[in-house]
Length: 464
Image (cartoon, rainbow, N blue to C red; front, side, top):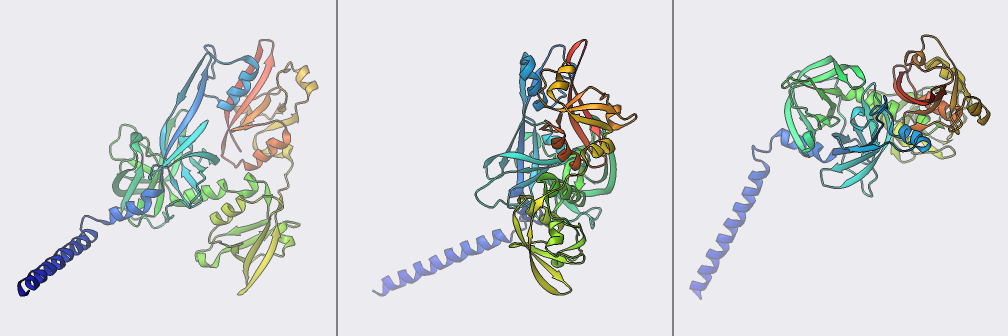
């Protein structure tokens, strides 16, 4: 009996030692020097990286000078009347993106998804989604995509590029050469770089870039550059050809400015609140109302200049981006419950959104593009020998030295596409004219007829 008791005690002691060893090993592993701040940063940001693949359907005509340079939607429109082209091919370029909130909004480079007919996204956990384009800006080279998930998605926290330090550690994440979930590290080599890149559209100038020696290769483009805290400080943009160890990223503060425009609910969803706002250094205060339009929904709800908007419905409003994103999901007629702080007193105001009023479309077309316009009627189409064009916007005159004149658009041309949108009438064009900002570059598709037959044209026009 005594011998059995001694053996039991020894067995118990051994088990205790084994358990203590494993517990100690586990603790050592979690506190191991191998788990560096870079590892922690990657763990934070990695799940928010998106692998983006795009499909582009391209049709070729043997005598077609516009092959490979026109919108696929415009190509489809032209083929409806003149038959399919003899050759088609599909490209699937690879790029990267980063999820910026749990609802599935993804930021990437505009050049990664430009003219894509289909956009597919794969996340780090292997889940696949088909993405929709929300909006894009070729000038800032930023695009916003949206994927829909039944559950909240991992996202990266936005940092700031104001306090970047030369020499601080940064991490570039993405999918270089299609290799998913790749990580490269380096330091901030320089700030506020101005670089000009040669592209298929000519030279494009980028201002205020972050320079880093973290490797940024084709496929990394559009992915996140994060600091050692795992915060987004830039969007990987490009590399210098034939250079080693020189990469660039668009600073996150510039990205945020571009996103405010790209999420503009008044432009995208045509809803009207009528309150202009600005951000505060102390985000806990909310956003400050700087002006209120007469007769607007905000005016009717008694929102005042100087109010601080802190919440809409149950959503905390900390910056303009969260303000724009939330209202973007709403439609004219929807009611919002807006909480404002007015002189230290909290008020809850009911606001009913309305359809955004359009300014004079003809005036906008002349100011921004240099075009005089009118709707294409069946009678005009017949007179112009454009029997096959059922709808569009007729260009009746082009202002000299205007953006439109510069790219060769002329009187008698019919505007049928702007960006990715088919244009049926002046009212539809008006909605897009409101989106156009000075310096923006928009793709336009035109058709016309002359003694040589029917023609199509495709140009990129810079808004003035």
